[in-house]
Image (cartoon, rainbow, N blue to C red):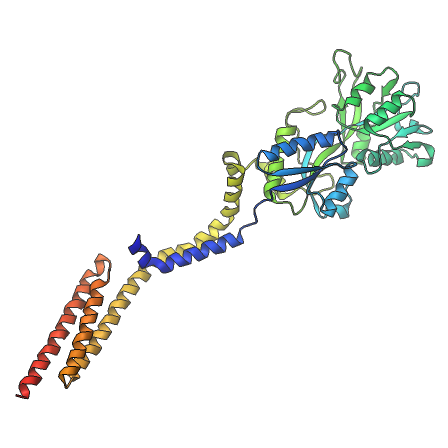
Length: 430
């Protein structure tokens, strides 16, 4: 090893320099802390965010969950930089806002539940005229969707009385006859859904024009809540209910590290891939853009699934290898000519050293021939002895042993020549 380093120290330094350059060009490692905007305390968004927090926590990434007032608030948190990730209802992001956001895909349907008092006959959203209607609080996705649908049906805010109640608060108000109807966006698992569906004084509206709404608004999907889906024993609902549903989607800032996006995509599959009352297993997560561009990481995931490294290595190891892999080809490109050139260059250095010794030997021979005194010849002999010692301490490959021994023989020849010339000069002066 010592001999190797002695021979190839320059190549070693070049290699170290290349490694330093490679690591300086590596993409920064993923953050260990991210912020996720969810929803109101106890709501579905917060429950989903808690599951992501656990999943990413198992990969040593801390997820801070922010309580918010809903999707509109979540968009603001993303744009301001307060949040890196958010759960959003589709259809709420403007084109300007979409420029700095990316979608990782949809994770489940969020159906619009239209409950109303049973003594109020309703067949269509136009029948809301003159009613007191709960649409959810300002900043919620339900409020934005409800206002859009009311406008679609030619109603104005002056023709209905809008209540800011939402979720369980709206459900309690409806059962207490404090409001006439409620338009709420939630998954079928919400507690208040079952409370209202089982209340004999409350009816669930089936939208006959659900397909028309979904065609007019691509971010909506017409879905069917099957007869008995909420409760087979109580036959709730008593018939198939046509509904419209925006998607719940996972949205990130466009500067979120790709490795964190990949972790989120894996968590999305684990969390939402088993199906629900409205979607069969495997339907989610889905590559639904709905006004937002899909991230390149998401596109790759939906086309090919998790990468090979992510399947078989821990997250930190896989991430490092993926980051380093992109530099492997240029490193090999740079290293190949260097490695290939090491043996010829080493041979050239050995030959050059031998040539230099021969040059020195030739100079000493000339000095020895030109010497006119014993003192000058002693100086030449001393330098010849130094040259002999120097060539005796050097290590060369076996293929150059002949050249080295030939050089040492020539050094002895010059030394003998100087001695002979000295004897001849002494004899001439006797």
